[in-house]
Image (cartoon, rainbow, N blue to C red):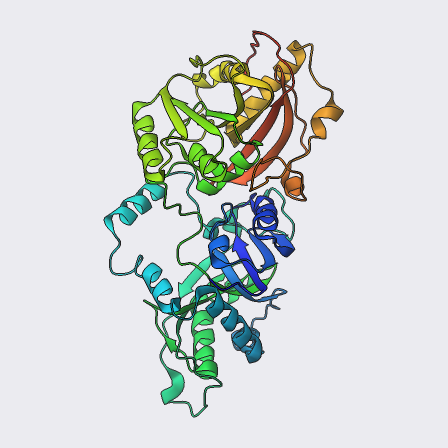
Amino acid sequence: MAAAGGGRYFCTAGRGLELFLAREVRVRLGATEVDCVSGKVFFSTEAELGELRKLKSGERLFLLLKKHPPLAVSRNKGKMLHEIKSLVIDEPKYWLDVLSIWKNIHGCEEEKNFMSQENHLPLKRKSQEETNTATKRQKTEQTMSEECQAEAAERYMLPERKIDQDCWTESKTSLEDPSKSSGEKPLVNEKLSFRVSCRCSGAVAKILHSQEIGRAVGIALMKQFGWQADLRDPDLEIFIHLNDIYSVIGIPLFRLPLSNREYIRTAGLRSTIAWAMASLAEISAGAFVLDPMCGLGTILLEAAKEWPEACYWGADISDSQLEGADVNIRTAGLMDKIELLKASVKALPLPSESFDAVISDIPFGKKFKVTKDIQLLPDILQEIERVLRVGGIVVLLLSQDLRKHMDGITKCAENDSPNAVSDSTSETATAKALNIDGDSSSLTNGVEESFLSSRQTQFGGLVPDGIYGVSLGKTDAFIYKYRKISTVGNQQISCTVPK
């Protein structure tokens, strides 16, 4: 496979995962000129197509054509459309250079076959397996796509505003060949078919519909390059995103999102979130890793695929969840890496201090309403602490509601525990980056900016080591990281959880 030859790319990411993705492209791809904005990461790399496919924390990957400041908004639609067309088709030599990179990435002979194989998936019919997977993903609350992301600021901040403040529109525009009515000779005829996908948000969307933009740009490209429009099975897709922060034009490298894992039969937690959680757990060769509420096993699958030299255990009280996890594990071919057992997280049949890392998505308050069951959270945390070795890592995903309860519990723990840490210690935890080829604990420039410097307190022997705000699509959530520094015995912590 030919190298990308120093191409410039961008990859979309779920809100809160931008810095995880930035860190990953540096480590996995040796990327340079990495630039993060909300919902996207821009970077340069000479990585081959196979390496680009391995990105785990991103959604969709694009070859970057242009990135410009936001358009000047005008009430004159004609003027704005002219500016957009100029933005897209200016510098035709640059277009040819980027298309050359695109062809080299895919290989001249396999270019059409590669694209058409993926293009057929969403058209006349899908295979039964893809249809079932898509249906199950739609039913999953955590499922989101890059269309759900709000590009709120140049640097990541946990947004306070609601997503409906952006007026999202998208179109895949229908075109007619203008060559019959135009005497213009195409600049170059590459015999490519194409379609335009346009998405607008913010001020631009209040003036122009994405359909108008897509049609105007499509006609301009047909005149400029002699390409033919094909909405169903194009060689090339042109992606345009206009908002109040920037104007971006790119070519998708893959039809399916990177987050669509072929080894996951039944979707549970969003795979990108699961991978990000595992990357914080500092998993090393020979480590023992536990998910005590494993559900369908997504966290274990992502961790075992990335760090296969560790040993993984999953527990759940639900037979149906364990059955789904077993199917996923078999589909992924990880039967020798992951062990499952039926058990309650309140009373795990496992020896004390037997695991190096515990990673889990705590469901209370997200899939289920917060009820009196939430009072069990202190017992759950104490059982997790019991099975964790000193020096081990806990990574938990909490909903917004559950985070409030966690804060109340840790405050009680701070008051009751003689080993409570000081404010200065709890507020200066530093996020650690992953090492793809071995341990997940090497230090790099990475997710520090996504680390929320809110006050955190110790729970028993668990010292806080970071909180990360992420999006689950319709709701926000928080990844909590703790490190066990001591064994405090069977100390019982009881308190009334605030409502």
